Image 1: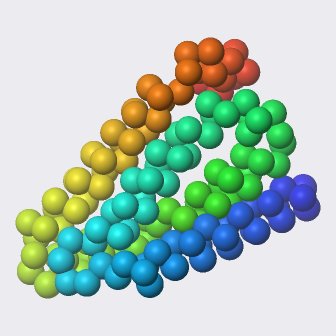
Image 2 (image 1 turned 90 degrees about the horizontal axis):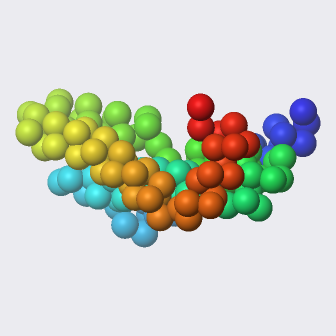
Length: 133
């Protein structure tokens, strides 16, 4: 239990620092929040790829470290929600809706793409292991 908690905590800290660093390198500014959008879409894609990697599935702590930890700390629902709220509050409802729906659609497409890029053998192995029921 302690090792699992440590894996999630260390991974989450690394993912959050990565997200924060990207925000410093490419701040969103006043328009469309492209940095947060890119972070959430890339995080969704990477998270969907993890089950295709047998080395990740076979290690008890690696999915916790990479998935719940790193990618959980990297992606950000709270910033997505706050940026949407600010856009609405600033009277830019069209942009806010485009951001809300565009992020959702892009994340779903990223997950779909990751699944289809996974080799059929990895998909079958994942299903047999009980990952998809």
